[in-house]
Amino acid sequence: MPRHRHEADPSVPLPPTLSGTRPKGEELDDILRSYVAALSPGQLLPSERALAERLNVARMTVRQAVHRLAAEGLVYQRHGQGTFVAGPKLIQSESLISFSEDMRARGLKPGARAVSVSVVPAGESLAARLRVREGAPVVQLVRVRTADGVPIAIERPCLSADRFPGLDRADLTDLSIYEYLEQNWNVRAEYGEQRVSAVLPEPGDAALLEIAPTLPCFSIERVSYQGDGQVVEFDRSLYRGDRYDILMRVRRER
Image (cartoon, rainbow, N blue to C red; front, side):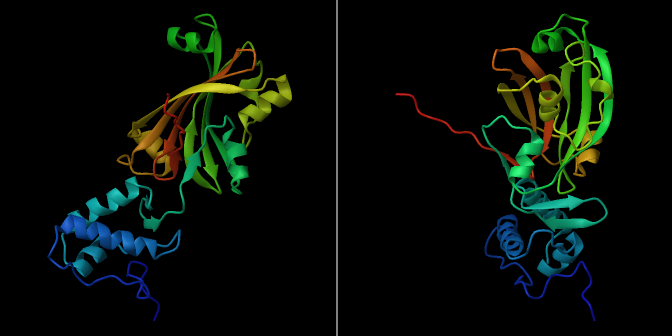
């Protein structure tokens, strides 16, 4: 008889109960970490109820432990489907490359789904970032970026509509904006300045990324420039904290 999908895998050791010699949360964390490490990426974990009954702990205690694993990127949750073992996190390096270039370099298939495209007058703050006059037309895009079909990030690039006429009508499905600008306007982003913050996603963004609103994410604001200092774009992106890490190299000054 096949196992129910919410039953623990009998080939993976999972104690029937806690020892009672350590704090429950601490011991439960260690047990679940070892259990997840023994499974393969994409495998389904037992349900919270099954784990609670198996380990003789409150369901809320299990839920909190699973949320901690999700926040660290060890597992991910899909609404109505359960909790799954996550693969290795993607790491953003210091190089200024597009999402598409980054994913292809990792052997993953990049994707892009347009959520909205609009042309709006630049407010004071946006005009300053793009170095355009206040009220100048700006193309605002919202796209969900995927790797092998899995939503990873939401991009919100803003570009000058005067400098890139027709960009709002371009079909950018599964395309890199950087590559599109280089091919059509011979504009290449050479360097950038960015700020990274830890945030909780808005409910709408959480739905687009297929994550819980309680999962921490990275908010990345970046202004990219050509080699001569001209601004190419201002982008505000949201990356899943369970699938992405930020790598920074630091040096101690003498």
